[in-house]
Image (cartoon, rainbow, N blue to C red):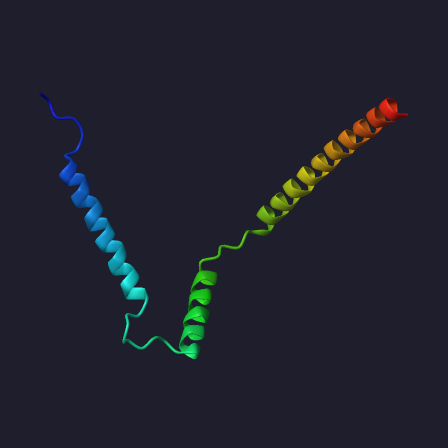
Length: 100
């Protein structure tokens, strides 16, 4: 008989190690019973630092990219408006024809 796929014990061991790893990372973030949690101002300062760090990652578009993106959005909105207008007029004419 040939063996196909991973052994069940290998899979269980991998799942157990993943569960331990996620539990360990959770316990690092949240204080345990008896430990002191951060104060209000420390949490606000941490939040502000994280916001600043995320804003440093933002890549601003060049002027040409901004013009291109704006043009694409305006064209798309115009096409959707025309589509909705045609559908609305068609449904209005159909309703007038049926009930009219």
